[in-house]
Image (cartoon, rainbow, N blue to C red):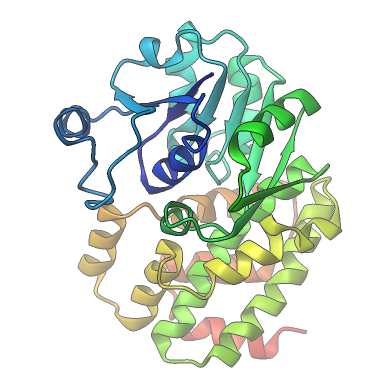
Length: 325
């Protein structure tokens, strides 16, 4: 079957490699970069991301959205969260109610909606699933045992994704809480920035664990207030992804936070943002606005927002944690 992946970032490549394990799958990855496309045509590699990775023959690249979507059976949306609205607008002329799996994480900054709500509204479809969990792209590529939570708007789409993505090294566990899975995936990136800040300030793993424990309560409350289930915090998308993202320099959110804690050099900080996808940075402002709009007071999110976006002294995070009731 034909499977289309919108996006050729690290995670898109990781998911493509998982899908390619089934020999009857033909994966077409869409990229807007003609440079990536030309490079792939010559070498069957994308050297700018994984220079040593040669792609299986059942993965191809195109810069043409119409070709990417023609007669496709399943679409994976794996772009930066900030581009999901634009991507939906661009694929709408070629879209035929094909099942879509969203692997992007975040809250749309314009509508302040979850990405599944955004996609559903833009494309007028209920054939939507979402995946989220403790998986770095490099670990997928190296076939490390990994796991994802999956939720969606209908069972048929969920099963289609599981049938094609799950394999001997990647486990998918179904959740009935779509909003909870999406919120976990979005909020953990924000907490990862905060964990990185603590590391950059020189604090111990004990202090980072302190932050993670406190954040669990806040994430659980946000999920409940916004209509999800508290227990979703215990899913792969919740505590699993939170622990991974908040404790590893492989996480760009964690590394970005580390830079903030370590230096006040805005040139270095802005350079990192320019050269790396830091979903938590984009999501932070959107989540902060969303909570304010709905009258939800989560002081931890506010203090992280103040530090990252408004230059508040990073040490205020520690002061907040110690004095939090």
